Length: 123
Image (cartoon, rainbow, N blue to C red; front, side, top):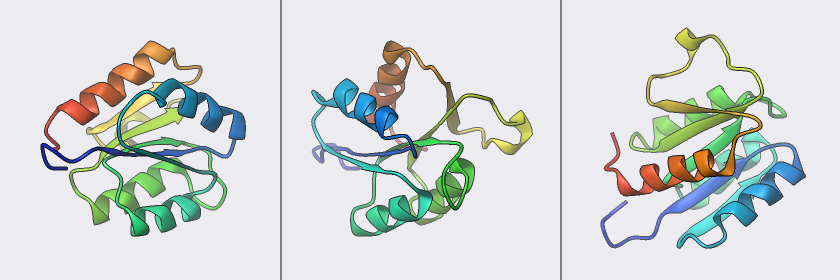
């Protein structure tokens, strides 16, 4: 993402209520906001427009959130990622640059992640 480009957000969760809550939480942020209910749908969306920030649930139809984030990062190495989950997987399987947001995640914690992800240089 260049300094003058608007960020693109991708929210992935099989629960439409979770996606709706994220859309409401981030509606005031500039940039494109898209949501997907499966890993495959998210990969297709990322193919059309690579996101700069992804928040993905761990449990998804077809593939888990970590596999999705890994596939997306293979395409876009600077991608900022968070795993949104009720149970934290073993720490040794989570890449060090993936943030874990435990459900229920306080809105201010989720916003803090997104704000830091869009203001900090990727890496």
